[in-house]
Structure formats: structure tokens, C-alpha cells
Image (cartoon, helix red, strand yellow):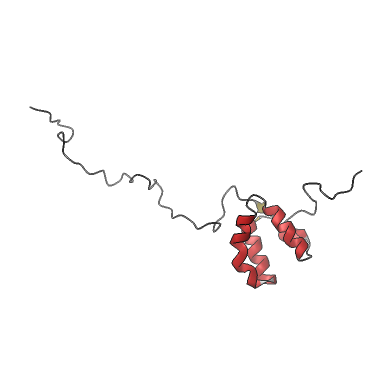
Length: 115
């Protein structure tokens, strides 16, 4: 009698959540967060099957190791414009854009001859 229920605790009693229920804000997955630009995501641009980060790291390891520390800041600066960044690097170091996973054509058409 009173306000008790056979299926649950009485009014005012504290219960603990089930062990299998995740806490608020923890999410249902057990994956750990990755640092900025550390991993490849499905929406990250690919150049010749590699990400812009992979290309930059490989390029600087071979040509200018002192620049490796700047890879993440370059990616942040050119976020969404990775292809332009790689074209700028190809031009600066006088290398073929194909070596950086790019096509030889200029996608914007800027600088192309009028026909």
C-alpha cells in the first residue's frame, strides 16, 4: 500500500543506471578521438590515392625535412583548398604536379589560352 510499485523503486529512492548504458556525452562507441589531421576520413580529398597530408609528409621527408613540422599548419591554412596548396608547392619547388598526385590540367581554367 502507499506509492510503491512492484516493478520499480519507491518514490524518492535513488537508483543507479545500468552498467551497459553509456553516460551522457560519452557516445556508444569505444573509439578514441584522433588529433587534428592525424587520420584519413571519408570526406578528405584524395590525390592519386593518397591524402594531402600523406603527400606533404612524403614530399618534405624527401626534399625539405625541416618543413615537416609545418605540415599540420599548412593543412589548416588550406583547409578545403588542398589541391591549390599542392599546386603551389609544385610551382615553388619546380616539380611536375603529377608527382604530387595531381592532374596536369588547371581545374579553374585560369591562365589557359582562349580558343
